[in-house]
Length: 209
Image (cartoon, rainbow, N blue to C red; front, side):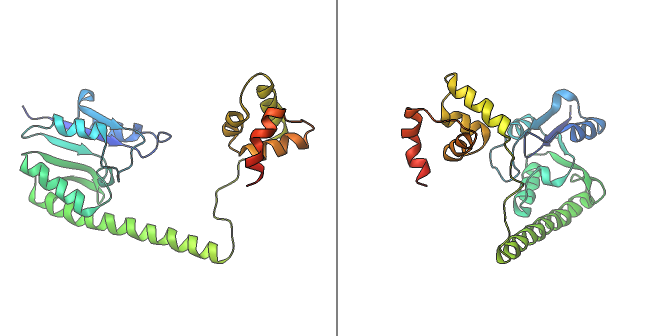
């Protein structure tokens, strides 16, 4: 008996696959046949649950995804994957491709898949060029390329110093705060704290940076 195999993916663990899962389940996929990868980029070759989804596919089955970019970013790879599925006697169904539901089992769906895959990669390349161009312009203008700096309050520094007094290492506390050990000691000294002798010795190399 043929069945639908669902696959959902997000690139970071902070993102959620809830919307993808709702759409895939609504398309008729059983929850037991839904595979999900969290924190896995489409550019990565190794996607554990994606591999499990493929292993679960049998002749006549269909892999269901919400959008084309869940498979990857390369048109060549996406088309090769669709061809591989056809060779195995399985199909691919994309729930939102060009604004509609596309099944590669049909001639029209196969043609549209090829066109949309090419357009998808082109859109990705355009976005990438815009980002590169923006970075180049900001660098030429002498602007900061980093994100918003994390603000560490004096209260956090005081609490961190107490952790060191309680036995935590300065290196670990500084790491947890997201700053270098040298910066951490400069902040503690500004608040009137004096580093232990052992800490001062280990700090020498950092201050020299």
